[in-house]
Length: 302
View 1: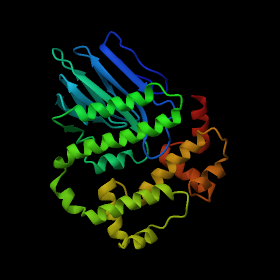
View 2: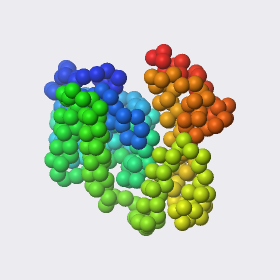
View 3: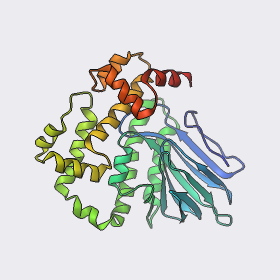
View 4: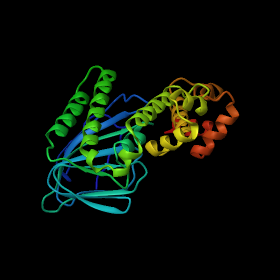
């Protein structure tokens, strides 16, 4: 069994468990909505497997040929050419190449505070992790472009920008493949107008998290009653507006605490929308199980 450390740079070459194996890291992934971490391609030997294990990022595989099995959320799927399966953070998974006809697949990994909401909008979840497409060529082309961008570049920041854009195109293609598989009541429950308004609310909360936020005012500005907007927001994202805002603020706080600039706890709190540092610290501990100071010590000790 093999796995990888996403903090290590460079390309990973073939090993005895693979006929071929290449993997390129994004050396300077942006922190925010959607951050591409790495992308690769592999042809494992028959019976090669990963897991049972968990990741702390999203990992998408598309099968180019061959067969294998993927298990998540207690359900096992047989995957073949054209199938894409998604591994979700903190979900126990296993995947294994077929003994006689091992698969050839390509993959991309990412994280970011909009990842969960985006995949939910596209119809993916641990209970719906698979989509099929008859023609793998468009997806294969996007995977190769992502790897080509990361492979050799004198400007890592520009490579990150291009690779992240290609990731969004890849996810859009997967969403198109999955459009026909969405629950019938999903399209009926979220009419196009409210869907656009929810996406606008998500963007607004993602950008304005450092400001005083009133869900009442946000609802009024979009032309909806707070109760109705909150209900539809949770239907689309899986979270209430305040839960989503808390998630954005806490993830940004972790980035600042782990950043190169040594901001004080008061400064971090203020930067993510909490004028009261004590209240911020209580919310941080409630969310993650440790204080901001404890997190900073752990992060810098790694």
